[in-house]
Length: 389
Image 1 (cartoon, rainbow, N blue to C red):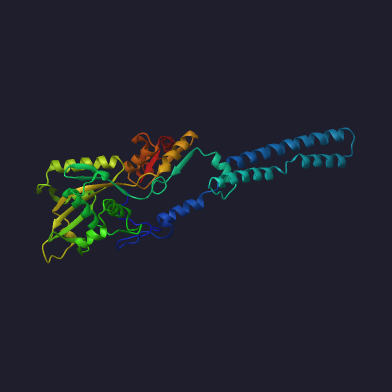
Image 2 (image 1 turned 135 degrees about the horizontal axis):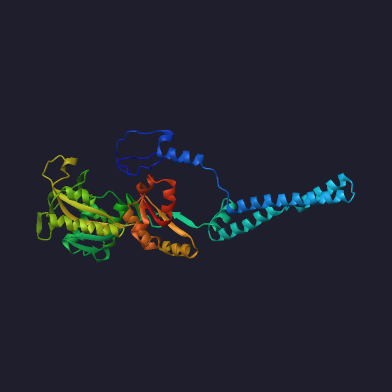
């Protein structure tokens, strides 16, 4: 894992930053990939290899027969020139010139069948190659999943609440929803989502319950960039982020009976719930806040002595057709494998839902295979169904 590294070829979709160039050209990660592609030779398909072997064997057999016939003809007293011409004529007649045409025609039929299944094949040999597939490696985000985050659970006042059971009358749950909309730069107008998928998931949840982001933002206008809002006549800073990081900055916890000091037991309970969410493949955001004095110039150093409010767990749900596709692959004797940049636990949970993985031991992270030899890797790969990070 590399922290604070931006790779060439990445798209910066939002935010600001300043960087230091550490590598250029072929030394970059994209350059290394280009180097690997350059040094890789194109492999022949099984059909091409078999046809080549068949051609060699047939050629040897024809030459042997032609030599025998030439010898017999000369032995019987025929003219050497005539015997040679007869042997050459036999060789030409015996070579199956139409074989390549027949193979091409058969493969083109396969291409037409694939086109009817909405799969376009660019190279004819790929049709035969697909028929020999025993392992399919797939990305996760957007391929096996919808690439559209949706809120699955709330955690507030020590309770886990499913997204479809949220009560807008409950002040705690409504407060958490308002904070998730205010500490948010995304928008969804007329079905057009703009912003980070994690943030659009939060405002979409509000829309499900008739709480529109624009109305909440109008009621509690943002005063500063961090962000910073005036709520109930008070200046309130809302901070969202990773549970572990924010718990380190938290001194108090919000309850229905008022704000109190956060205890070791509170933190352990929150961490336990966070782990439970992660085991289910959910992405978790913690929400905290603190009061800010009037006329105060806000800085990043103010993000401490926070009040813990709650957690929101989200998921990029699997595509409906993914599970059926995985089942079909397994029936056909093809082993599906997931390769993703996501966290191991998250990836394993999604893979379990769609049938790729049965046990967590079948998942590994990229760092684990980095130092393996080819022999070790050869023995390791057949047991792994999910490669994370």
